[in-house]
Image (cartoon, rainbow over all chains, first blue to last red):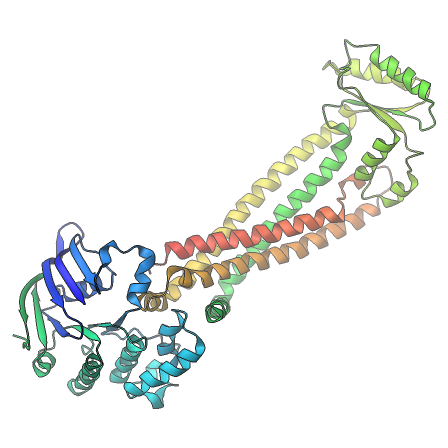
Length: 225
Length: 301
């Protein structure tokens, strides 16, 4: 589903974010990208959704080399991906329902589809009763659930999560992980960048570890070391 | 498809309300600049009306009485042609009653009373004379000679009527064109800035839109529509201004004494309508282009 071949990404003249990284992620996998801040985790996620292009190497998504993808095709690539962020990136002037519906609206889904899919995904994340609230009327965990609902409403093949539990207390973080786990069980490939030891050790999924942009460990059912 | 169109209009309207002050500034500036553009066209047309009889280097017009017999007209023509060293015979033109009447309709647009008195039967015919010499005294003495000919009603010299108007026309044209171009540039810049500000205010929304797979055109269209509307509203306001201005001018000129020549500065209603349509098109285009450039340039917010 996702393949990186000798990928190197350099910012500026000599700041290497990712150096010669290669790995394969199969359909339906759940993978943790771990490492300290600045190790290149977020850069890898940004390379996977074409927010960045590598200086060297190739990034393959669902059999397509996305570096060779024309700019006009990038939106269609992203429609098959969900993105979840540490700061949720919710629109403060829109309700929970509208935030989730927004993801369908901007890709031109008709109203009847939106009316059908949004309540279903809000039920999945346990927020069906809070559909008319604004983001600042919700707790951090609830906001992250809205963000996950928005990422998942289009039933993407891949979900990229950048430190989704970074702003949450441990108990709330666990709830979020259960949600991502159930999304993964439905067939969506999940790639999650984190430096949360507890979560990684609890989930026992595949772990790809980075250190200063270099892949130093790729382990099935791994732990954070 | 409908949901996309509805989305674009909804977003445009929301953005309009959000940036009311900047939008108003952009609309007012574009209205003023377009009004100036429109006024330039009207003034120019007015001067063209005034100068229409002097087109083609004509320096002298010999008016022949409407009751002149063909042989009398031929006699006058013969006198004029008798000086081939001074008069450019290739350019010598005779306007018969029909042609003179057509010309008068342009010149006296703003003086319907005078125009109604003229008929193709009563109008004087004209010889348009292009001298070969630049010697003003010689041309003037020729005019004196022609004035004495039978059935010549009068002789007009460009030097007396045309030169001042021509100079004034050139000056007014330059000033209004420069001012309207500068103001139009300011209007485009203001629209550009309004759109940039609107995009900056919504950068988070745009970021989310891009991440969930909205195309650049989908993001851009509401902003372009907003700029287009700003330009168009400015255009509508300028049309209202131009119409009022023209009406006031036409009414004012109607109060002048007949024969002052000022009535030629009034332009026909159909021309004003044409200019107003042009202002709407320029306004819409300037708005769409300004906002389109801003939207493309700041899409990576």
